[in-house]
Image (cartoon, rainbow, N blue to C red; front, top):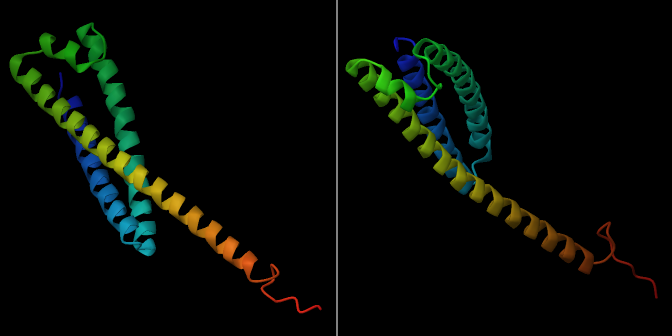
Length: 148
């Protein structure tokens, strides 16, 4: 009964781990101010995110189907007691792998988010300082006023 769901869970976990790897690379590129590689990594992240969403939709569909067959809620903890031991073990293992991938990605996304916020604040601080300095050297056009 789980022959379709287990591979979906495994594929989704693998995709999220690939996305985690890209997010780690994004963090390093941001930290090292490699903007050109950051743009490439953003494209990779978007592609992986789209794939993860498609796998999530397929997983949800398969989960609802299995829930209908088993007569329970569409959650792993409801499936496991209703399955044969071998199927339950495969499903539990695939579910655990997906949960670990989600937690790993979520943690890295929080780190990246804080880094982006810090970078944004630093950029705004620098822009404000440049504007202040620009104002102290004469007119906004950069010239000096020599009127007597």
